[in-house]
Amino acid sequence: MSNQQSTTRDERFSHGLEVLRRVDGEAGQRVIDSLADISPELGHQIVAWGFGEIYDRPGLAPRDRQLVTLGMLTALGGCEAQLEVHVNAALNVGLTPEQIVEALLHSAGYCGFPRALNATFVAKKVFAERGLLPVGEQPAREEPPATSA
Image (tube, one colour):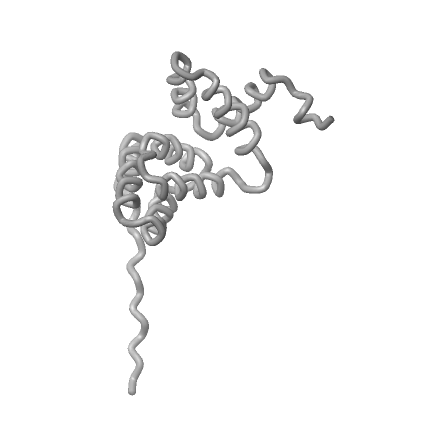
């Protein structure tokens, strides 16, 4: 039996909670707390499985996991509350506001302008709360050099 399989339910939850706090900070804890009176089991599974088992896997760095998460939540649409948590998490794990904005801009080509706009406005709210507005100047597109005939 592997070490992972021999851990108790409480140990898996404790490990997941460490990962959750490292990534999502207080925002993640608030989500779990908000489930206490309606579905504490969902909160347990998010922590133990989502963060303790999936999020803590070594195959992707935390910043890369957040980029993937931002893209998926944007594409799904209707996930603005979760996007708010994960924009904060993306900042917590080292993504810059400029990188987050670029990822959301990139998503427009795959999931449409309305969803990219909704996600960008969530990011704007988070950036405002953290004193990160305005986001730095985005580079202008360079025109190709004119060729002489």
